Length: 190
Length: 190
DNA sequence: CACCGTCAGTTCAGTGAGTGAACTGCACGA
DNA sequence: TCGTGCAGTTCACTCACTGAACTGACGGTG
Figure (cartoon, rainbow over the protein chains, first blue to last red):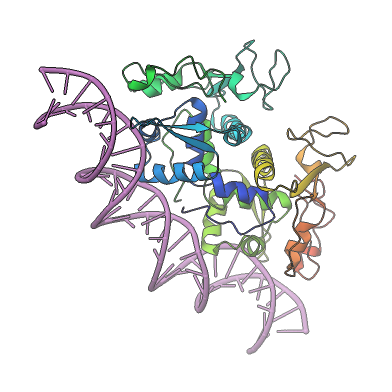
């Protein structure tokens, strides 16, 4: 673990948090986990991350209890966010909001909405319609005004991730094995 | 910049944010800036970070508009958070909250309070007393129930940072030059 | 049963950044 | 002129990331 192995500061929870999610790629892996990406290969191609690094990061995240590793015995493995991992959402949201505010003049690249009533979420994660703090499984993410359509043809996984969809919902690619069984089962997430 | 130079994802503000604050040490530098640490040497000793790395990180943060570099001509330089840098506070707060929740069983290592009325801040940064979202300069930070007193004698800067104090307030060490003039001047921060 | 594709994960040489300690240069003050 | 405190640089060393190729297990197919 190159970066965050040990931040010596014992009395700073920020440093402790960085030891878990502070390395390069780690937070992007977590983001993709929120987006519903669960498989090793999908993460590798999606992020463009060296597979060796991905292996290390996933091991760390599983060891820290951020992800669980489900091996179905048929050679396919699924990495799922635990409650502890889901609790990282405020961090991810805050970082997306900051990037939107200062590096996306046309507006947010992704809008977050309360799936129940379609209300936009403010910076605290509260629904503008019902006023409640939307729990993660009820959040829908979709392209916002600052989204820039790419001209290159998206691979199936990226295409899935681009359209409006709920967080934690597994991506279902028709042509692969995973579309078969686990579809309606994992609905509202953990 | 080893880590965050380029995350290729053009449509993710999270990736863009990580390019700025995703490298090792960077977020700890920002944290110390919130704590009032402003000088190169203080940051170096406080964080235990190699000076060469600190130089690079500060350059990046200044270039990105997170910090400003004030050279008083007398050889002393002050790095101050800009508005853009202050806007990172929700990220820092969220990460401290997550670390407190999962790695500090005795409770938060640092409590955040609204300096006006002493109300504790909840996870959204709202004051329990007045209900308002406390702006950064009005936040007081102090040791919380999970704080572990060290047995080693604290250096002056660490001692300053441990006690209750308002964010952005400059640290004033009596024995050094900085205590002279800029004391009452930079009160409520930027 | 050999063949093929998919999948997770490993191995390996090359490289680039972090690490730690020592050093430079500047501005005071005595 | 000497000593001190400061910001920042230099340098050799090490280690983790990078990228590509490889391994091994599983399942389907003819």
